[in-house]
Image (tube, rainbow, N blue to C red; front, side, top):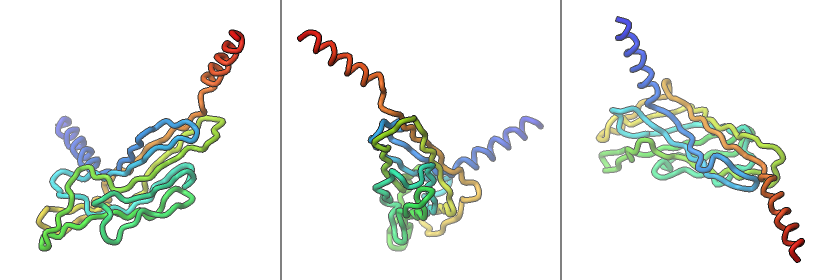
Length: 191
């Protein structure tokens, strides 16, 4: 009996994790002045057809400082969407979505996960101490299309797993600067 209960709990946990937002950081460690691309992706549960719409805020521990090139990714840039706006906490008001309207032969992209938003983060030009930019999402809408031949969608927000990620910014290695100075001194001695 205990085995059945454990399996049931594991099944519920797996189902809960089936819909999520993920934060993908192309280059998670940056030196001063370097940039990386960050992409948000949405995953939906098996048995559903496609992501219909997502409304989320992108939270960054540095606020909107260093962020640029906010963009929705096709096909999640349908009517009524927005790449969001810079705020004190990051980017607010990201609204992404796609149409699925079979009578007009318009079908949603069933990619799972599906990329829906991207931005560029550029580290400050001068960094005295290493720091981490913590990233997360705060989602208020997550809808999925039920079937390919239906324009009906339903919310999966109640069991959504929010995205999390990080970018590490490190000062330029002092040892490389010392090696460069040592090389210059050795070259001068040879002359």
